[in-house]
Image (tube, rainbow, N blue to C red):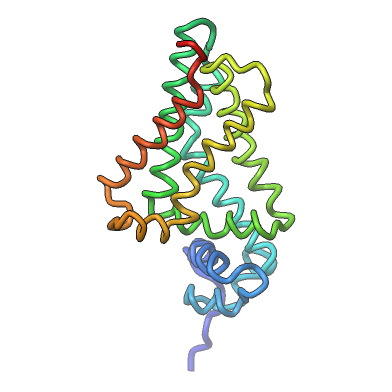
Length: 220
């Protein structure tokens, strides 16, 4: 009789990572078990310590993966913002265009992508019950997003108070996140299909219009 080979094979690590995103997102770190994750992934439970050192290491790997995916999603815009010259009226207009592009991409990812709800469950749990992994989330993409939006708001509106500009940036982020956090209320309240392409376009128009109103230069 041939002895069963329990050595993890190719693709095992990725299957565990993808499965853990859903299991941690639905059950939280404390309630999720390595047995639950391994069973859902269809792999031997020994693969978790083999690849990740245990449940804590797997959770951190999930957080790292989410952060990297979101950074890749917005990487091009971060580069444009970092290299832009926002002086004068032309600079202000460019800043408003980048705000629009940033928010449209954010909406598409949070409300319109397959990964949006999967990632959001974990991020929202970390917001409510932050673990040491939250530092990775904040430093990895939330802080850069806030800093980028703050820069754009100051350039677009002439706001000189960084704190006020940051508060406005948080407001803009909140306008997008509500469409994931309160999805069921929004879908039922507006009798939506559940963010069809037409509905996403309607959401984008409203959020962008609000953003442009917030960043308008007084008297112009």
